[in-house]
Image 1 (cartoon, one colour):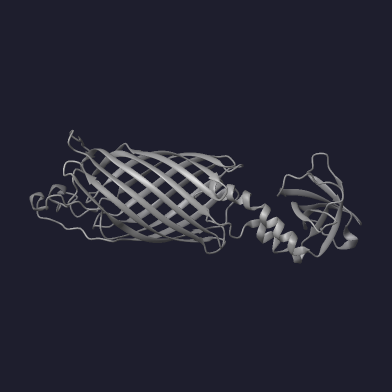
Image 2 (tube, helix red, strand yellow):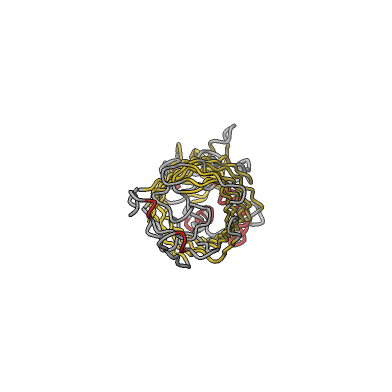
Length: 391
């Protein structure tokens, strides 16, 4: 009957994982070991004005406008307890109003990895690396007049990479504060950049709200830093998003997530409010994610099912349920500080893992266990089973 108990516990923790993994996870966490996650995101960007390399804003005229649509596909895999691998592809469509031109296609592919260090209390730490390769090439021209009529580029062509550090503070209930800082090697012979992102999230069981600020600061090493006006032009249309000179921007954002079992739906709005050598504009996105369960902490706990070397019965429970008394003690080799798992058992072979604690006080034929974790909202009663793990 033991395998039936393991299967039952496994099924019962699926809903809990879906809520915690997709809603209450923090930026520095990786997905569960042996789990995989598919993510689809659609983004719409509309430029409202152009910012030159000095930060001067140039409003679009009535017949000017620039927009782009993106479709992003991402696959994530929990390679280990602390390592996550990913790969993705980005599709993009750009439109110039004045040129009455649209161009679309596969923009780039990317691979990456995130390694999460063991948390220190509520603090979570991770490093993230990524390599990106665009799927097209751009042409530099001697002057704007040489650019063929209607030519538009999809973005900055070439290879890119980043090295990122992530720090998260996870509060009780799943609320969190997150920050990340990355060194970015940019494509198109642009200056390397520093990327930053700071955000806060409020999470409930199946719903979350978040808000933050992301941005870019150039390291100022563009070859045309002192003569930006002489930089070889490309087919940009009205936009200054690409082929920039030491670009920078600040982009606050706000969003929400809602889960339906293992599916998560997200919406996000963002706006570039300042910068240099870029565009001001608005971005809206909708995302959809599906996550397999993988191996959870409860699963790893259940994998130790056969390692118990002592079994006792609960004979008394404190009024507030913080302490329990069992009918085994020093004469049965119970030790102070020993870990015990508490199960609700029945005559039909049921074994529901309810709580975990450590031996707090001990006598010859009894021990007091102070509970530290609660896995299920079940009141512990006399007659429950306590199984001890070897120290």
